[in-house]
Image (cartoon, rainbow, N blue to C red; front, top):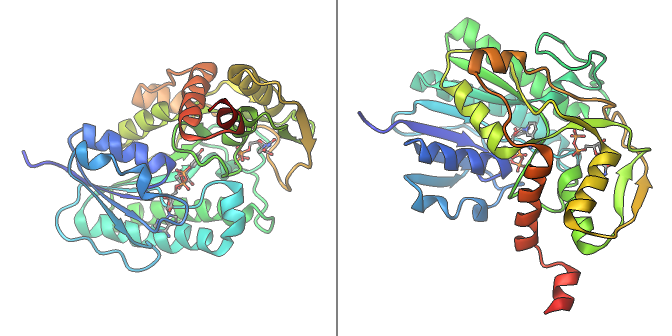
Amino acid sequence: MPRPRAVVTGGAGFLGSHLCERLLHEGYGVLCLDDLSTGSPSNVAHLAEVGPFRLVRADVTDFVHVVGDVDAVLHFASPASPIDYLRMPIETLKVGSIGTLHTLGLAKEKKARFLLASTSEAYGDPQVHPQPESYWGHVNPVGPRGVYDEAKRFAEAMTMAYRRAKGVDTAIVRIFNTHGPRMRPDDGRAVPTFIRQALAGEPLTVAGDGSQTRSIQYVDDLVEGCLRLLGSTLAGPVNIGNPHEVSIEHLARLVRDLVGSASPIRHIARPEDDPTVRRPDITLARSSLGWEPTVDLADGLHRTIAWFRDSLVTPAAQQAV
Ligand code: NAD
Ligand code: UDP
């Protein structure tokens, strides 16, 4: 049997790098296409030792051409943190629309299975709680977050159009908030921000009164869910997320406790259109993929904090030297 081959767009980013690593362990050869706008070669520098891996710097909103057979196309390229997509609004819309068009075209040409990384942001500020895949969402198209939410909703529609009109074997995963090693400490998302602040002894910046909720999963669970979906014949969308829902105030205090920090909590302004609640209904993933999260919140945070401790030179560590 020849080795299967996967193309992963955005493979030098946080989730993409974990996905590439897991695919190599599963026996795939992996070609990573990444424009390095928010990702970094250092995230995948170790992968050449794991298996046949190649990183090619490419913007998938330009024409995508790959020589040779491809069995799977995983489209993960997109700015993903609010700071990144607010800084790159046009790029975000382009990679969700034109980038999805190009990668679907690649999957069609190669007769490959296609997996789209969509998001819980497709539900916007939800009015149904928890969110099942059948919920159509509550998104403000003209607000600042619209560039990300609508790009992903367009990407989902494009994916279903290629499935229906061109017979491409497609799947859509709706990813809920995920954390783990290789997040950028300055990407503005709650988990890396709180960890960085707690390690540095700085105030933890909680938006609004902190009563808004999120349901946060560890990266290994997400990767397992993606691999199961890729290996199935399901079209989705399928929610992959940890239903354990916590308030942001609770999350900040938990991170502070796990770090062992004395940082105070500082309340800051709540961003526009910041969703009030979010929790996945994972009935479909459970019943059709036999998937459910296995890493609980505190356990996962321990691992992410350990990685940040190793990779960040904090003021406290500098003093200790
Ligand atoms: P990330 O920023 O770490 O990774 C995104 C990667 O895409 C980066 O390496 C970046 O350089 C690359 N990229 C961006 N535009 C590109 C382009 N035009 N051409 C080629 N490469 C490009 O973000 P992440 O958290 O790893 O997110 C990965 C994917 O998962 C995204 O599609 C995101 O929308 C989705 N997602 C992530 C989360 C989460 O909690 N991390 C939640 C929901 C959905
Ligand atoms: N948040 C916060 N302080 C920060 C960064 C984020 O209170 O320094 C809040 C943010 O307003 C949101 C929640 O944490 O209510 C999750 O934000 P994140 O950017 O991690 O994910 P998303 O909003 O995309 O789900």
